[in-house]
Image 1 (cartoon, helix red, strand yellow):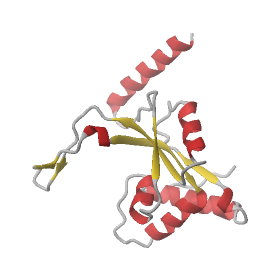
Image 2 (cartoon, rainbow, N blue to C red):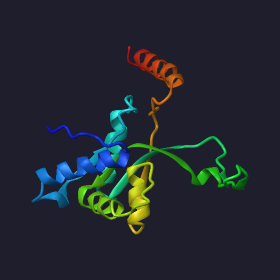
Image 3 (cartoon, rainbow, N blue to C red):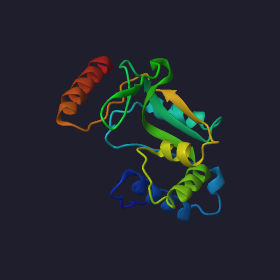
Amino acid sequence: MQIVEGGTERYLSTFAALNAIQLNNSTNSQHINVAIHDSARMLVAPNIIEQCIRKLDEFQAVTTGTYTTDTIVHINNNNIIQNIPQRNTLRAVQTPQCFHLNTIAKAYLIAMDDTNLQVTDDCGIIVKYMPHIPVAVVIAQEPNHKLTTPDDIVVMEALMRAKQVRNA
């Protein structure tokens, strides 16, 4: 096991981890799969991770997502709605995200040369810099909530209590 210091941005943390993995596995990197998970999603169900990893048999890149029940809008710089996409074409993307190591490493090498790099997750690196690689979405059937605000603590506690009741 190796602990790798994270970066100031998520993509820098991932890049550091990918470099460490490649250094430790330089002879066989084409047969290695990696799973990247956000520690703020601490209640991820093991079956979600398993589904993402299994999907790597078919795809080089996989993410987790949920259906959205909200209407999502595109706006301009003045907060004026420009477009309203159909909900059935939208997914709220989460982690885990899984990749063939050689695919995500190559995408990151390309991305790190971009002086205007702006992405919010690792699949975004694939979509932006290797658009010919399809990214599959595994639908999370169980709560995979992210702890980012104080209000999320209440939600997480309720989810943990509900899980305890189901498992009792």
